[in-house]
Structure formats: structure tokens, C-alpha cells
Image (cartoon, rainbow, N blue to C red):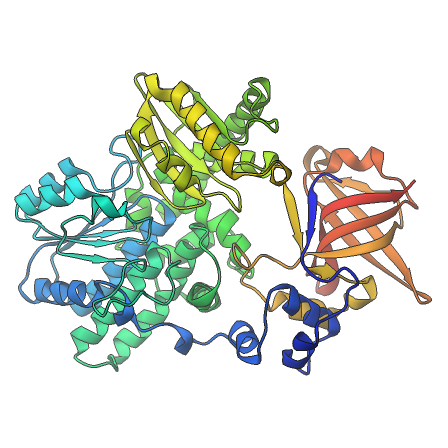
Length: 592
């Protein structure tokens, strides 16, 4: 066994009486056990999960700042003021910018509207004082930030001093209470209480989700009615794929309205009227494929991110806003090339960082966080490399590029540990930082690096148990291979979209037998194909499984071995035939 198995359901495979009562009459016992493991306790919960509706979305006026920001935006358009949307350079920031851009352009095609995205390396994350000054000098009257700004006290003060109205829309961690909020014209944030003093019902929206809520209420204000015009109705529906892209790419929990927005966004993504998104799908060779969270997370998202990581994100921004069809295809093709460059750079960083982490003793029980810096590491790619190391070593990771006197980079965490809290404990050693529980960006003086490593190690060691360091697999429940029939696996697939907060169901099969010799597949035999069977009451069901990146284990597993396996059952269609298959997550040899 290479990972810790955390079995959430009942070990004997039984179901609770409550789950049996509330599950659909069409559900199989396996589905009922999955509902139990996911904590569903009543019929309405299961209905909202299995049959999400757009009417389940929360009223945008429940969010702090939405009404004030919308009114200011309407006023700016009607008075022909110059508006700039200031977006972040990642997928969430780019899609959030596009959402507001298309909303404003529908209201007034002649609106004085521009977008601005900072250069990742030259300007860094968030609002930039020099950029605000330049925007004002260029005639901007109103700047709307998306996916950034809630901790930008100095920048908000500068905007105020130069006569620039600033609306901040963000979802990241709020500044410490003692620091207060930036002095902006309005702050739209799901973590702040609204004018009635009530919290927004769901605090885990991404930047694109927050922008969508602002666009929604802006549409009602512009139309003068809760029932918006047909054009705005269509646009709000067409914007959902952009919300889905930002939600998936930002790895926020796919629960509550994030689940609703993502599900309906993915359903419409291939029917998008936006030429840039259509070109991106085509350049990614996804026109003939179903687009799910995995396709967004591993195909579309990385391409949108590529130019921001390897250069400047303005091209990705143009792709999703005002690109012509020919410009869109050219940009999408270029993003594909940049993404391949990013992949090679990422592999080099990951290989080097893994070796350094082990050589420097950062993978043992007494060092529950990995913190490394190197001159050659590309600061635009270290964030993805962090994720790979966190997956392998089961602990938070910080990777930075040394740029002379400054170290700048990214951090990624694991479930149960807030990397933002860890960085907060080192605030006096950092030049800048921001983010949330699972991901953050930071910079610090190189002279503070050793002290930062020691301080963050102390915080991580105090907040992460040794048993939690082994990468874990959360297993929902036990099942037999006989239970994995076509209809049941189809219903499991209907629990999508899958991601953080709603991971793909993982099932434990005990006493399976390796039916034939495992077969290596893929380049250099990187992956492993295995057929397993299970004898159960005279029945011998057999299915094919694939174990990604574990081809080297072929020589250690022999035909006839008895195994416990953790699998993710799926339907696989090939040459017009659909079969039940599974992805192997881990294997335990019961007997040799």
C-alpha cells in the first residue's frame, strides 16, 4: 500500500436506516451507501445535489457591496465615464474580467471600457499603484478589480487621492480585523456581512462567481426590473461556462452554488457564442469530446494560464473579450504552444525540487512542510510544481525563485492545513502574500529565507499530525464488482461535477484477484492496465482497470494475486461500445 486509506463509509458495507429512507427509490444499495458516506441526511439535500437548479442560486443582493457597485457602474455608463476592469492573470481572474466585460458591452456597446491585467513577473499579483496612476492619467474614472484587491490598503488610498473610484470584487482571505478594509468606493466580497449585517449564504465563490453575481444584479438595475430583458437573460446563461472555468481552475469547493454554476456551465460550454472560448476548445481538440471538470482542469485551464505563466496574460484576456474569430484562433493556437513549453519547464522544476526536498531532509516526519528556493525556477510555473510535490509527499509546499535580494513564488497545501494561516504566522518575514487555505502567493527578502523556513516549519509541525503526512485516499464505501453494473456506474457519474468538496467516488473492493498479467501502456510503459475479477456467490465478474503512472509496478504484481483495491468506477466508450472500467487509486496485496 502506497497511501493511507481513509474509509468513510461503514466497513461492513451496510447502510444507515436514514440513507435508505431518503435515497431515491431508483437508487441501488451502492448509491445509498455513497449518499451515507457523503453525509446526506434528508430528502431535500439529496434532491438539491442530484437535481440542482438555477433557482437554487442565492440572491445577489445578499452579497456585500453588490448594490452599491452596480449603481456606480450604471452611473458610469450613463455618464460616458471611462471604465477599466482590472483582472488577475490566472484563469479565475481572466474569466471574471470577461464576465463583467460582456455584461457592460451588452448594456452599452459604445461604453468607454478597457481591461487591464498585470504582468505576473514585473508587477506581481493584485492591484499595482503605478498601474492605477497610469490608468488615471489615461483617463480612467472607475476601476473595477476582479479576483484581487481586498487587502490593497495602500493602493486603494492612492486611487482615492488621484480621484479614481475603485470598486473591489474579490473572494480571497480578508485582511486581519485590526487592519480594516481598504477605503474603496465599494467592496464586493462573499465573506463580508451585507448592509443588513447578515453573511452571504455561501462564502466559497471564486472570483468569477463573485463577478457573475455582480453582473446579475447589474443587469436587473440596468433593465429596471428583476425580470431582465431577453438579451440579458441569454447573456447570463452564456456566461455560465466562464464561471465554470474559473470555479474549476481556482479549485474552490464544488458544493452549494459552485456546484450549480459549474454543472450548468459545463452543459453549455460547447454551445458558447464567445468566439474566443470556441477557438480554445477547438485548438484543444475537444470539439468532439464531452467537457467535464477534468478536461477543464487539465486541458482548457492550463492553456488559458500558459501565457500568464510564461509571459503576459493580455492575450488570454483578449481571447475571452474582444478577439475577432481570426485573432481568437491565432491566440488559441499560440496558447497551445506555450502550454507545451510550460509542461517541460514544470517537469524540470518538479524533478529538481523533489531531489532537493529529499536531500535537505524536508520529507521526514520532523519537517512537515517543504520550502525551497532556486535561481533557475520560473516563478510563473512553481505553483503547479508545488501541487505535484504536495501530492507526492502529503504536506504543504512552498517553491520560489531567487531573484537576487528577493524570493518570489507560490504555495500549495493539503486538506486540513491552511497555508494562508501558516503564512500569516510569518507575516513579519514576508514582503507580500495573499491567497486562501489551499493556495497562496508570496515574496520575501532573500535574507529572511532561513528564518521563514524555520518559522513555517514550526507552524506546520504544530498543526499537522505525523499520521497525516502520508498521502491519503478517501474511500467512500465497500462494494463488490457485481454491484458495478452499467446503470449504477452511470448514476455514480451523475454525481458530477467532481472536484474539491465533491471528489469522484472511490470504492474499495476486497478480495479481488488479478485475472491476468498486468500490461504496461503509454510512453515508456508509464501506466499499467490490469484486469481484476471477484468470485462472489458463484458469479465471476471481471473489469479492466488502469493505474496511471505506476507502470514500474508491473514486475511486482503477478497473475492470481489476491488484492484489495481502491478504484474510481467509470464508463469508457471506445469504438462505439461502452464498458464499465475503473481507475486504480491504490492496491494492497492480501496474499502472495
